[in-house]
Amino acid sequence: MTYPLQKKDTSILYVEDEELLRKNIVTFLERRFNVVYSATNGMEGFELFSKHFPDIVITDILMPVMDGIEMVKRIKQLRPDMPIIITTAFSDTKYLMQAISLKVDGYVTKPIDYNNLMEAINRIIHFLTSKTLEASYTESLKRIQRMLSGAIDALAYAIESRDPYTAGHQKRVARLAGAICTQMGYTEEEVRKIEIVGMIHDIGKISIPAEILMKPFDLQDIEMSLLHNHCKVGFDILKNIEFPFPVAEIVYQHHERLDGSGYPRGLTKDDIFFEARIISVADVVESMSSHRPYRPSRGIDKAIEEIVAHRGTFYDTEIVDACVALFTKGYNLSST
Ligand SMILES: [Fe+2]
Ligand SMILES: [Fe+2]
Image (cartoon, rainbow, N blue to C red; front, top):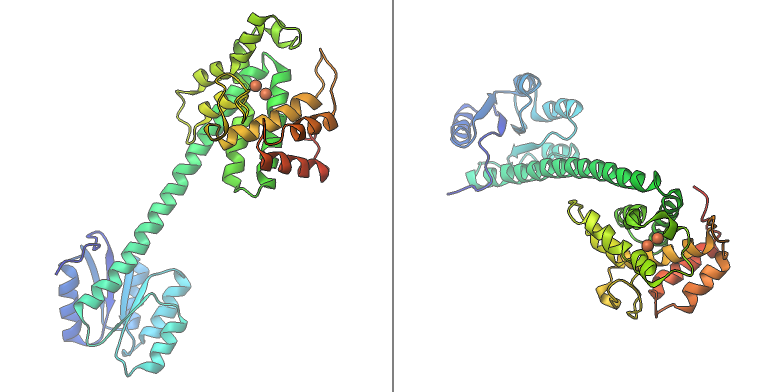
């Protein structure tokens, strides 16, 4: 018989007053686990527990000196989530009910069947392993997020030191895009992704001469193509950074339009990432309604008119609707 989940490094405390049974079970467990403690009653069991803190406790109920119920109560006071398996005869219903109320993790009826016992132990090991994995996954996710925030801040700072207007624009786009995402009912994680891309979506403008950035109207063809190139430059800057989602590609796409009239690649509909569609709406709304030193604001009403006029052609209908709903509720673009 194989027990695939058994783990050698799991430590077990077994408490049983009946000597022969205790010896047999201990021998069985010792063949499978490195550390097995055994005790003859609840008092002794609790002492061993307090000294060694094993991973799993297996205990009988009816024992002299201190019964299993009292011992489990004491253990649970120390460690409320301690995994405990009760071994009991069917006739011990009164005690069994008490054990259930103590929220133990498994029951094995007497006479003990080794398969049932291993099944109960393995179920707990499986649970403990997945809990450990989950904890280490959460920890590494947090570490990645910290690294990511650092990289984003550094990139945002790089552009801010050269072009404060683009930096302010990116912050407001990030905030608006996140708010649209929330309005659409997406998760906090999705909102955070959108905000990250928003913070650096125009990073490629770092390569554009300041004179061109300052006069986005009446541009010569060559100047226009330089400006349009900021999406590709942004992609090139970001493509080798290992983000947990395709930040570089989203940045590449943020001026594309659903009908293919956008730039730089003239992508259409499903070829444009959802995140890029949101950034494009937030980008237009922010750009049109913000003041720049070289041009006045066209106002939020004009900006909303623009996205509504091109709802379904340039811009995703649901994203436009969510954006309009936000401003109807009084969203303030400039508040931080
Ligand atoms: Fe842009
Ligand atoms: Fe932008």
